[in-house]
Length: 397
Image (cartoon, rainbow, N blue to C red; front, side, top):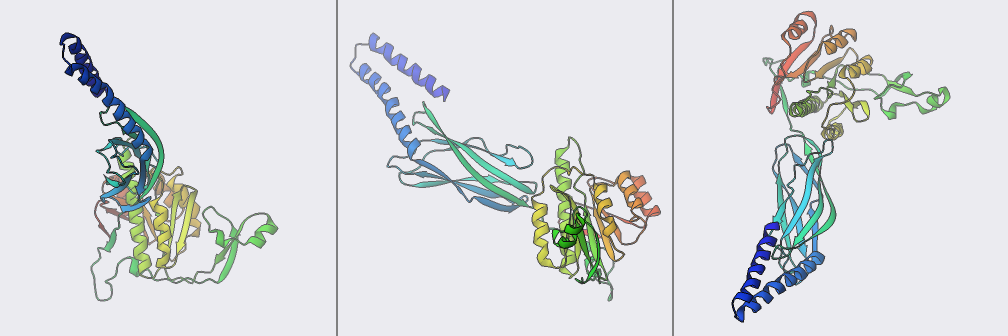
């Protein structure tokens, strides 16, 4: 814009000099035109400023990771004159981190009288989560680009990026009697028969609280149901791993844990079995029990909008908190980006390291220390399973 003003000022000065040098009637007329044109252009800009409108299409977008999509910005012209050039200013922010991914300068040539132009803004995101496209300013220019009027707007478009869907398989050789996935080997049903009472623990469902007894004893008491279950799965998801300055790896591994946990959960539920998910959420350590596939949408939505940063609480604290609820019939999956000494110590202390049916799922992008890997194989009954987080399918042996 500065260069247009400079050019116009130099041109006006030259014409003014030529008016004194050359005794021609054309020079004063040309000078008058140069003076009148900016005035007319400014008036048209003011009219455009008043008549222009902006809408977002749609107000909410749901896409999957790496899926290309376009957000529509509808520019409306409510006057008989075409709209002069417009610049739309906004940003694309993660709700967890302030990231300016959205283009700061979106230019269009104009809008016809009493018409609407839809400007498509493409995007493709590599991480799941909840984002916000915020449009906060519209700049209207005159036709000569000498003047500018800015209008503050407040448009917000919610963008939800879903995790990738993955499929778990068994690497075991199939036979006539054993050709099922790990999920299909877990057969269970659950009874609602009342069994016992205990004190409330963080992560317990509010629906299981015995309100009358809690009021009498002045502390929360939880009703435990009798479990007539042959087998069921417990999944511990580690969302606390932090790779320091490598923020890309931190977010990649967080998504990997989420996608793997969801894949195992869905596979188990599709076989008609029950699953208990334990994780660190924004409200602290959480636990959610699912007995049918219709419950899966809750855990999928909860994991999708988790903050894109490591959980504050240690993963070992999560295992310590919920390990007392683990029964003999539970098959346990521990999904974690890395295996540490602290984690193995906690698994030994809780007794999980020396019981069957415990699998630690990690990722090839973060190799497990050879000594820890050897310790798991020789000193515990747990299975160490390494998978490629970038592939759509993975195998559990």
